[in-house]
Image 1 (tube, helix red, strand yellow):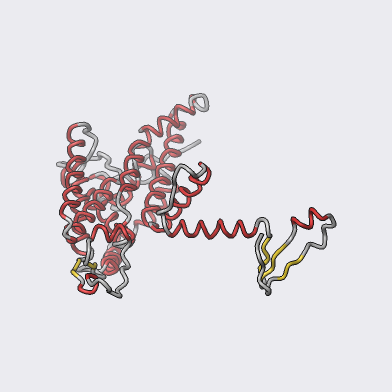
Image 2 (cartoon, one colour; image 1 turned 45 degrees about the vertical axis):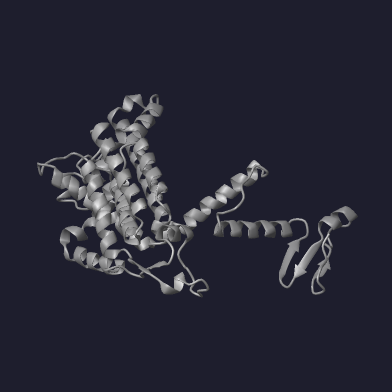
Amino acid sequence: GFVLPQDFAVTKSSKVESLFSASTSLKIRAGSKTYSSQHGLFHQRRQEESKSLLRNANYWEGDDLRWTEKLRRRRLAFRRSMYNTPARSCLKALNLLAFLYQVVNTVQYIKFKYPSYWPRESVNMIIDALLGRSATAPFTTDFAHSVALSRYQPHRYVTAGFLHGNILHLIANLDALNRLPLWLETGLGWPLYITTYIVSIITGNYAHTVSRHSQFDRTLCLGASGGICGLYGLMFTALMRMGNSRASARVLRGMATMLLYGIVFSEKISNVSHIGGFLGGILVGLLCGPTYRKSYTMRRKWSLDVDAAPADYRAAIGFGKVPTRNGLIPVRLVWTFAALYFLSQARFRAIPELLLKGILQPGTLSGRRLRFG
């Protein structure tokens, strides 16, 4: 049902003798590529459609499509979001892997303490690990933040941001991370995104340290909420610089709602860490985030300037404004000074060794290593 150009050579398979099998093995050759007439063109068309969907998520998904086609398109849209936001995908993967290791180590810890219940109560042990016992496991105590331990093991200021108390804590933080607008990474760039997340975890844990009255306090503080609040702080700073006061007010209302929930409904939530993370994100946004200026050429009707900003980023910025390339301090310069400072301090140079010990031999750093035999 199609016409072949003259430079295409149509051949038949020499191995098949019957007319039916010969018709099914008809092949089309163009240069060095050979496509099956019944499968190759269809497969090629599906690949081209998949590439177009990966480039653009605005496709029709109405009731006239089969559920298999809807599922395929949603899977492609998910792949597109992971491709466009590698930093957010890596952060979610790290949080998931860390919690999985917490659960495994917790089950080992419970099995070690109560060997007579294994394997009869193994399901209940796993459920306990998922619902909260992982917060007291050796791996968690090696990397969670506390005032007493972080003074001598400074890696806890960062690693605590990748640990969670239970699976509900993890789901809530991943959902909050997933609800952040994509332009925080696609528009502002993944280096600023990662920098804000890590700096906000540190400032959140430092705020928790300052709020404690005793330097020997061993209360564990863990969770990604400090880094997520820092990303909200970065978004607030960017929206204020854009002149988008309505959206920035919504960010403040969201933060106030979260703090109110922590005060009224739960005593285990560290609101001080959330505030510290939010202020850390604002600080990074002011120092390293871009500013925005009016562009004469972008306001012209027949302008030849190319708008490189993503659609959602452009919607947040508004008409006729363009972001500057760098902030007051480039992110690369921040990481350079941080690396030089850490290399000059002996306690910071020991962090890689401490990380390996805590991962390979959980409990070593907190004195809770399991000794079998």
